[in-house]
Amino acid sequence: MRSGPGRALAVCLALSLTLVLTGCGFFSSSKQTGGYGGKGTQKPYTVKGKTYYPLASGEGYSEEGVASWYGPDFHGHKTSNGEIYDMYELTAAHKILPMNTKVEVKNLENGKSVVVRINDRGPFVSGRIIDMSLAGAKALGSYGKGTCRVRVSSVGTIPGMTKDGLPGPFYVQIGAFTVQSNAGRLLEAIKKTYSGSRIQYSEIEGQKFWRVQAGTFPTLAEALRRQADLRGQYPDAFMLAQ
Image (cartoon, rainbow, N blue to C red):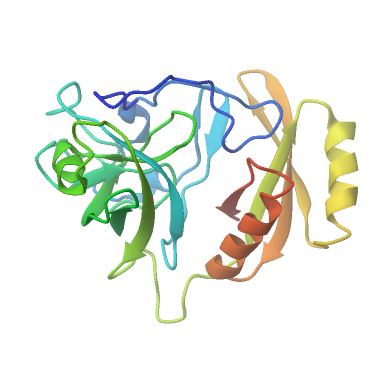
């Protein structure tokens, strides 16, 4: 989806679905247009066999990784929430944060930071966690280089939040299998630590998948902590809401 001048090698992606669901390239925003932050942008979506589960809230969200940027090829086109992309505005693309979430992006290489609003989906290139607009990349000092290592943290009012916080349960997906018995063995192992773990079945373009999800976790913060723990053994683990 978002190549831009900062494109590194478009390596086949295995960020979230361990062992089988790999993909590479970019997501066409036409699949994810649900109006300005509407329900269409909260639904799970699939890019080349890999399914992403947008969060209902960005409360407490924080992650570190590589930021890239995208510009002229997408300027004037629709973003995933139905807006027209303006590369001179402080916006960004993220795979699972709710639309209109404001995040502070800090360049860990030079200390510069900027607050941007999420209005698009991406980047779908291995190892990248956020795609900045041209304006965002210039604010971070990464325009010429193309990419930089950043910390992304939600700030301000969080879309989807209520006075009681965001209700769970949450899960952390640790594997996806085309053979049900393999998923069953992993489930038995993970249940020794997380008794609420489950298997979710899905079929994508005729291919059957059994997804093993560790859980359950009552809050977003707890799920994020457990995701960090699980990535020690399952590097591609990712969090999702029920």
